[in-house]
Amino acid sequence: MPTYRAPLTDIQFLLRNVFRAEELFAEMPDTAEVTDDLITAIVEEAGKIAEGLLSPINQSGDQEGCHYTDGVVTTPKGFKEAYTAYAEGGWAGLTGDVNYGGQGMPKMLSALIEEMSFAANSSFALYTILNTGAALTLSHHGSEQLKALYLPKMYKGTWSGTMCLTEPHAGTDLGMIKTRAVPNADDTYSISGTKIFITAGDHDLTENIIHLVLAKLPDAPAGPRGISLFLVPKILVDEAGELTGEANNVRCGSIEHKMGIKASATCVMNFDGAKGFLLGELNQGLSHMFTMMNYERLSMGLQGNGLADSSYQIASSYAKERVQGRAPSSERQSGQIADPIIVHPDVRRMLLTMRANILAGRALSLYAASQLDISRFHPNEAKRKQAEQLVALLIPVQKAYCTDRGFEACVLGQQVLGGHGYVAEWGLEQNVRDARIAQIYEGANGVQALDLMGRKTVRVNGDLLKVLFLEMDEFVASQQQISAMQPFLQKLTQCRELLIGATDNVIAGAADNPDEIGAASYAYMELMGLTLYCFMWQRILAAAYAAGESTTDSADYYDGLIKTGTFFMNRLLPRSQSLAEEITSGASSLMAMSAEQF
Image (cartoon, rainbow, N blue to C red):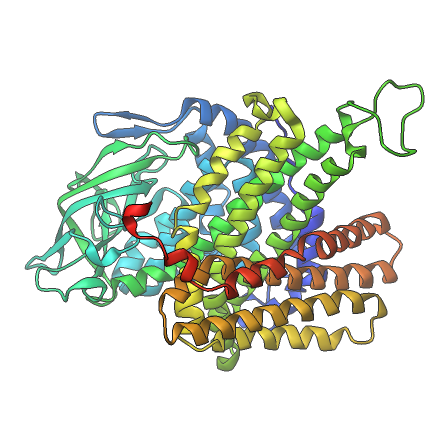
């Protein structure tokens, strides 16, 4: 069985040296008490939970999967006990509203905890993030009465939450949903319809499940403008916030049999006149749900990072122990018939690719999380607005690029192990299966790319990109006197210029041919992702040089960071040139064939 180890050294370095989290939190009254000491205590405890509670039931959960019997879903052995321990530790309410029993911690902190949970046990982590997201949406858009009734139990972890969007005929195009909400005389609604692919739609981990459901009133406007959001509990709740024991008309019709995340219940949910309560305003359901979606999409990128790190740990350990072949240089072990495969350049290529992308992906996730925190907590309105703009730009890239690189890392780790990577006991084949879904759910990566290229770039004439460039300019200005950084800064400038040229090219082309947006979108997302990874590595390298100059402690660690960053700049970043060329080649070759020719 593989043994997961929480990457606490990397985490603490990013929080303290790269993002200076304590200083950021001190700027915001609601997070001012989140000091380095508190951060360290929480992260270390979360690491223990990931290592000791979640990782041991990961493979067994995958092998057993969830069970469905007569409309009732049960989770694999050990999951209920683990969830109870997780809830009793206060983790379900970590970022929750303090007015209803939450702890009010920033997303930067919970993001790292999510990554560790996904690395240790992705199926288990999904139950936790769905509850967090549902509670967040309720806290933003629910009435005071609904918040008082439901949030305390959701933060306590005795109740959990879901989001119910997708229907058999309506996935990405939610404007097509058929689920109906009929008003009742008591200001409730009768919700009827079928939802599919509902993560944690039913299970035995909590006493109640609170569904957030998208539906339309009979006279609602057509399309997405007619969607409203409703809270629909599995078991009805009385005015004191206690269970009545009366089941609502919500039933799990079946669970999916999936490639991976098998211990996560993916349900078909049937609502048959179930009692629902309006969240927010009528016909604003889609915008209300996006309160949750930005956080959930960030979580998917964290799943990619986490599983990549788990795979890297297995592969790097294996490469240092597996003896096979002779070193091509003087590193041969005298008296041995073969050398560890870590000496071979191609094995190092795979491991360094994994490590470079994991560190950059973790940094990008923290960067996006920091902007979510600023947009939520900062007292300065201008800074909140700028953070909101950055969130809009960063989230689709972080979700898509981190999950793509995460899946790639899992496959590379499998390749390092060779035949052993294909065998279940090593854990890498499960990581490959579990990581694959992150590229699909919460908006498939192609949809994220189209959102980035269309709504976030062409539609606003590149204005959001200018906000990001201001951040880059501020950083570059701060490094002008650091000689060691100059070669790296030059590479950032080159990558940035490629991105500007590609952006201008697509905006100009789209004016005459709207197909140019979709034709360029995926390569553009990857170019943006690569540019952001470059920016993150600039910040990591600057912090590593500064830390190395100020102390001799951990010198080998900082040296390893610098060498990894140099590898990224020299071996991974050059792909930006081919991506820029792909984007500027236009839509003509993509759209030339007729449908019948496929």
